[in-house]
Image (cartoon, rainbow over all chains, first blue to last red; front, top):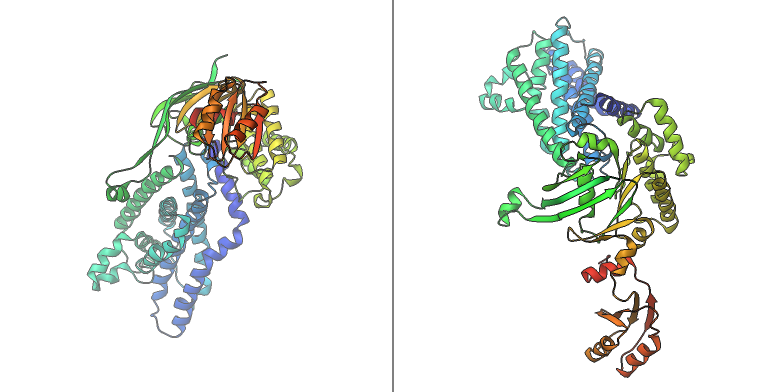
Length: 256
Length: 326
């Protein structure tokens, strides 16, 4: 790999992202803000949710935010880059292996994802009625999970961005995004799905499940969660699969 | 001087449907875009690939610039096999593509400086070179503009400036002046000649015969993925029988008229076309008045007569029986 080229590509993406910081913040924080407000504040005041719900909700919403931040940071620019204007061509012609151009996108997506997680946690502290008790003592696990969640999110973004055509972006949201959100154990812990055994098995296909459960294991360990080794296996398998499909899809899009 | 580019038996077959579409239509369909071509380009040369759309020019450039993997054959740039060592090859080539592909998220100057950064130029060097390029291509006052504010001619110049930022040995220009107004086209021609005088090897594709004639030291004529002629523009034009072309525009002609025209000793070849009869004649044969009366004798209507020297377009028509823009 040509490290100088890789760093220059990162510098380019950082500059472009910095110029777009307002829309990044809105895109990243609007959804969790509303979710936290309604589920963790309004409904909590109405006594419609139990007091322990916030500890289930915060890791779920954080995982969801991280997933979308990482995914969108890769998918949205990639769909444009690979689309009609073929803007990526100049970077494809730079002296670096084509796969590294895709990997650079993943690194940027991972950074976006981690940054969004860092923004959401304090937001949750402020927004939730009566606060929430987060355990930050397992910081090594939290950091490792944050990196892994970022990588899985951006690799999923790479896979989607490499396969989807610009005119199909709308379809992507209904077909991919909606099921991921609702079957992602965002608002309920996976263990509680024991009452619906089929769903408990099917949701294992959803990478968000491992992200949400992982963050529960790390920052709200008192909530019943999936065993850690399952979480790590799920995230690793997702990462390998999405990266492999994403890289080969990307290669096919830029090299005939 | 050894050739800087060697193309040996290059072939590219694209499958235009695969998977489910192929099973539906009873097997994959393929298109041979480049069909076993060979040529070499010497250092310091301007070499043209001339042919109509779909002749295989862009695919050839795509292979030589590492974006398309050849089905067979090799392309060697300064001895480097482009398919096997694309990263090394990319360091010494530059491409100005047919379609605008500037980075729309960056400003004009940033397009240049980031390109140079990808190629590892230190900050000071890339800033200086960007200034130099913007000045040379008359873009200095647009340096901080957004790309979508530029005209077609300016966009093309920015792409040329960007391509030159890493000081390539070979510049590939794919239909670099398509869709430009004459003034922009002339400016780009002038810059290409200037670059070549400074020693840069240029390979350009065009379906614009004047462009090939004006710029290229040698031209390969492509049709259906094959090179059908390769020589200097002057020598290619000598392939035309006679050396002078007379075009008689007439709504209709008749076999006896064509037979009479063919019988004239100075007429080397008669080409009946739609609405026109084209004659290839010996230069200085002073045939015009005779031709007019022959047409009148055969009761055909003559709308216009044009005498010209052969162009590369005539060469192409002579070789393939069809025009470049068809």
